Length: 193
Image (cartoon, rainbow, N blue to C red):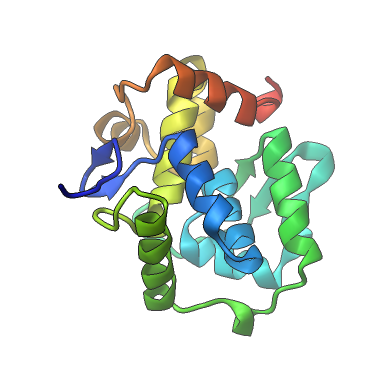
């Protein structure tokens, strides 16, 4: 029997909080900090790499990371700069990553990251199919849409998405009620909620 994550959208795993926790529990501290950051910040991998050299873009009093034009490498976006909104847990994750004082040279290649995530997903009993670093961003945005449907405009702005992208990629995922409860706990304080 083949192992796979519970929810797959556009050939990418959308982790449940349970699956994410199982994977994080098996990671070494550096990878866990990076993957936790990718999840809670819902930033693209390229934006994360920019952030490593610009930790001052984290604004704790506003619970956000302010991304200027040079941080956003994706060309097909309406958002040339944006604030990435964080939950209370998201702020803790960002502060932990900053405290590690990682340098760009400390960040693994995309291939190394893919290989590590695959290995951990297999150990966690999820399997390596549909695993990739962008699944953390996809998972968090899906969680936000599920928990805060009334904040779709804020979610899109924070993620750097249009309403059309949200409609095609994130709406309508049927999470279990226990997963939604876990999401609500992890997302406390997002958008001042």
